[in-house]
Length: 146
Image 1: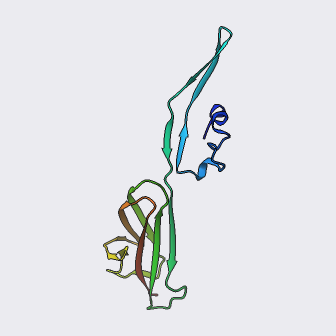
Image 2 (image 1 turned 90 degrees about the vertical axis):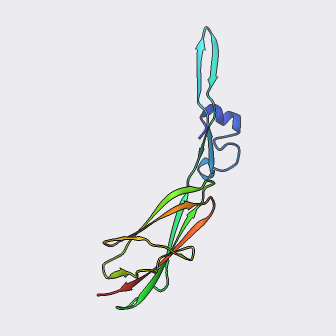
Image 3 (image 1 turned 30 degrees about the vertical axis):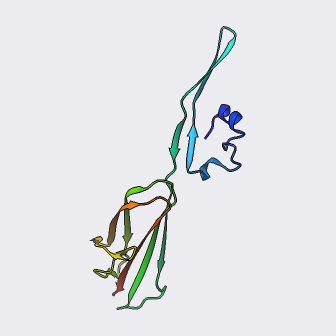
């Protein structure tokens, strides 16, 4: 976000882009010091720093909203990297309700079989690298039991 001096130089608080800062992937910022010395105003500017915004979205869907005792059911989870940078070591977790059991061997990432961790009701998996502007699709099956 620009301070008041930057706003003056860049045409408003949004860098002159017409939209608010929080919708941008890269944010630039600079600090200023101004003071009056011997009747003259002095202004000192810092270097400009750049910050890259990390933005991840998660969307979960199911094969069927109805499930009966003994049925298998598939969940799909999209993990979407909306930012400009690759992100390493994204930790995925899903907590399975009582009555749902993970079907061993059913976990896939982008269509490839993988081995998640299953501890109690928590299913987890580490996505090694989620590339910029890409998504990972995780899918797994559960079985309903009473």
